[in-house]
Image (cartoon, rainbow, N blue to C red; front, side):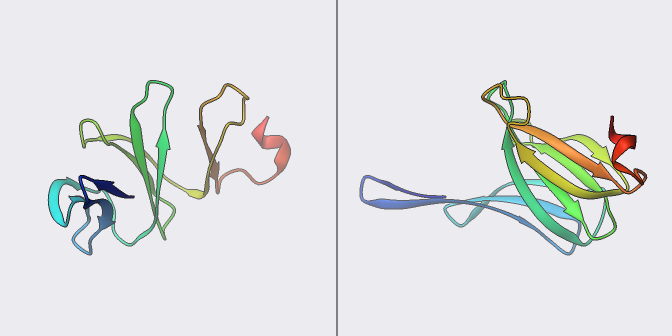
Length: 112
């Protein structure tokens, strides 16, 4: 996001590198680096949890997903064999929840 504070543009960017790192840039300056447990990042999504902590969900082409806490900039969780990551207020509680769809689930009935 870009903010205009005191007539100056402020930016925050999150990017993954080919060296298995997630990097947080603020105003074009690297602020935090987290070593990822896999290569070939395909997607980065941000989700705000009910505790007002933000997580970055990083997905790979191979079906790996990890959650990186914006607060601590540490890996909070890692999942494997995931084919889809969905974010929404599925429970109608006013906050986003994370839905991970596994490649191990072969039919819809397996989800319930």
